[in-house]
Length: 326
Image: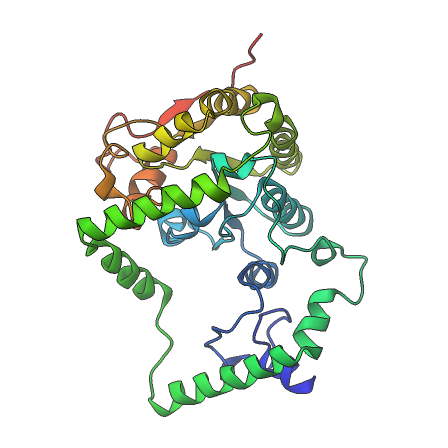
């Protein structure tokens, strides 16, 4: 127990006197869990939220415009229920000034379940002994991960290497994907479309446009909470490859997709990158069918923050102003 508290491999406990000895922590029980606790302890003024589509974007591209501390709290494959629960907690318990929220169509699928590692107990401040604490202190696997973390940091110390700054990691990340061969992108696109067809968009009710109503209302609650707390909320729809948009039609989801956009416009203004445009029509601007190359984040955030110094294709990012439909 003591070892796990000292090493704190999952970031569950706040910084301690031992934290400086373990700067590298790459062994997680759940990345979603660790992501939440890092956000909770770092107390950022700005948040980025969404799925892996915004998770891949460097926070520096947002911090450029907001100037103050920003944390990318996005979580791979997160449902709208998960996203709104985490956002609600951070809004209620921290002094958040701005939120950049990337919405994705698949997250509204009413038949998708929350991540098995998601826990409402994690967000319950009245719960003194949380299940996460038990996992962090008493689990045999955590002890093994603590030992691995110690070994990793000993190697780091012995090699006299420093943990790379985040901006260098992101630069290497962007370079890695920019070097992808077209053949590789084609293969990954095919695999991703099949995965979305079988899992992310697999449904019993999603073809019924009214099935997304509950999830739209969850978004509306966050919008209202932001207004109450004087938080500036920036919402955009993530770009996807044109082949993904074609898949929606193939699966009979075209009407739900249109109602999704219309329903969001009834409750808020947003910027729509999820269209057929000069960027999404080029499949090699994407890693696969769902994830745009990280280098395009600069265009996305420049559009959101009206940065006219950046050259953005005119059709990439359509401003949708809130409008009550009859």
